[in-house]
Structure formats: structure tokens, C-alpha cells
Image 1 (tube, rainbow, N blue to C red):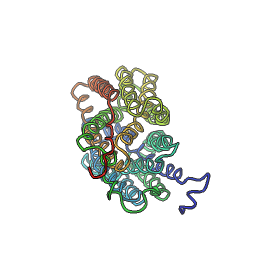
Image 2: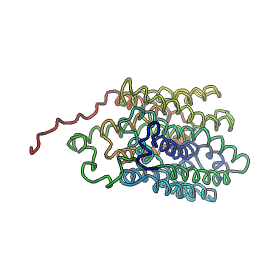
Image 3: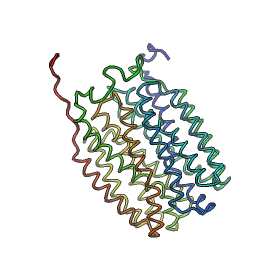
Image 4: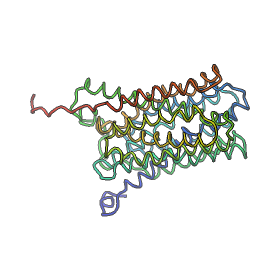
Length: 412
């Protein structure tokens, strides 16, 4: 595909890249949303406590956090294609190898490696789309579609994994899902291309070195707003990981069937899709930062359904409300970063902020498991989550963007 073809009326290769990046984020629906489907089979076979079982997923999140930063930096400098090729090989192989688990340390190692491979699927995909659509009318829609891949992946993979576990056992389920995941990301890598405006010298030279320089901001003026956004992202990610990693087993504890619990996991991911698609519309009305605030507060107001869970209808009420608000949040945090700090180092900013959130959020499965092991209930943990989400959403609502300085005369 040459530059002349890209300029033909009615054709824009960026939409092919949207589809490619959608495929990449689709696989995150498996890694982020579906570990809890494995929770009960692993607990039953090995007799691990919930804190120990959750620690394996924690290792995935740590690996993912590390690779988010590395992947984001690489995505700012190089074509996304070789980066996604590497993620396909590393993550797909590691997930498949989890089928050979004989101890919790085996599972921790395999999932950690899978996390190392999975980070760029998010930071590279989202920053690539923002660059392809910079200055275009449907930029919000393109970003929203890309991020819906995670929710669509949850719809697809949660019932698929549950079927594989029922039909073939959890070991073969890991093997099959790892193979499928690798094939999907390989297809994504074949289709993706670097944005035309990114061709040429690698980012990092001249004006592309930093968002603060691009905005005309002194570094100290950027630090506080970036820290604030990162804290909001971190709390939201911690909440998501705490809820998501224990959702299926919380449902079965309440007497809900395994199949219904797995369906609910997929439904929550599916409900994030309209939230992601609505994010652009909402942001056009209230701005990205207020959209982020509304999303976080909505997540907080969804938690009581889980605290008082008593029957499938309450489970569905939770996953619908929480899923929509979670979906609304994801593009909002990227949009907030882009709007506040520019595009020059967006991949790094997405990577750093999300990585910090993932590193802290990585403790959530074990923390919730610890609370359950000590109290024989998730109630205290869910009340704490609701409280910190309310506080964080309020902070997001009143947060202000850094204002660029007026241009200075040359020579000053």
C-alpha cells in the first residue's frame, strides 16, 4: 500500500489499522477478563487458597505492567508490526505452556511471561490509532472501536474457556486458548502499519522528545497533573482487577452455576463495548476528564449489587452497570492523557500510567483473596473498593488540565 493509494478519495488505510488493533486488544479480553474462569478448577485440583490462586494472576499483571512501559516506548519509535509479532509469540506460547502447570510457581512463571508479551497489545495499539487519526473527524470513534476489542474478547473467550474446561479440562483449555491467541495477534501484526506522519526519523529526536516540550510546559507544571491522572487510572485498574479476578467465584459462592458465572464474565466485557463507543459522544459534551469522572463514579455505584448478591438477576444488574462504566472509562483515560499532554510521547504516557496502575492493581487479586480467607466474605473488600472509587471519581470531576504557556519571543 503506497502513499498515493492512501490519499485516494474514499479510502483511508487507518480503518484497516483500526481492525488490526481491534484484533490485538481482542486477545486482552482473554488475559484480563477470563482468568477467573480458571479459578475454581485450579482451586479444586490443587487445593490452593484464594490468595495463592490470585497471586498467579498478580504475576501476569506485573509482567504486563513492565511490558506496557517498554512497549509504549518502542511504539513511539518504531513500527508496531514487529512489536506485535513479538507479543504473539511470547504471550501465545506462555498461555499454552500454562497447561503444563504442576505447582503455583509454575503458573506464576507462565503467566508472568504471558504478561511480558501482552503489554504492547494495549499501549502500542491505542497510541498507533491516536496517531493514525490525529486531526480527523472520527478519531474518537476509531479509538473507541479499538478499545472495544477487550470487551468483545471477554464475550468470546469466557464461554469458550468454560466450554474447553468442561469438555477437555483446564489444561487443554490453556493450550487451546494460547494457540488461538497467538494466531489472532499474528493476523493483527500482518495488517498493522505505522502512521504515515510517523514515517521517517524515529520519534525521540527534536520536537518529538517529550509532551511537556510540545505543550510549552515546564516539567514541574506537568508532573502534578500527570500524577493525578495516574492515581485515577490506578484506582480504577485496582478496582477492575479486584472485581474481575473474583467475580465468577463470588457468583458460585452465592449459589449461581458455573456456566452462568462464566456467561456473566463475558457479559460484563460485552457491556463495556457500548460504554467504550459512547465515550466519544459523552466526551464531546462534557470533555474527557469529566467523562473519566462519571465512569469512575458509576463503577462505585455498581458495587452494591455485588455486595448484596442474591441470585442471577442481581449478578446481571452488576455486570451491566459496571461493564458500561468500565467501558466508558478506558477511552476516557487515553483521551485525557492525549488532551492534556499531547501526542509526541503518548505511547510512553499510556504505558507508564497504565503500568503503574497494573503494578498496584496486581495486588488486588491477592488482597481480595486475603480478605476473604480472613473474614470468609468479600463484603469488607467490596465496601473499601466502593469508598476509594467515590473519592477518586470526585477528584477526577474537579481535575483541571495543564494550561500551555503563551509562546515566548524568539531569543528570550
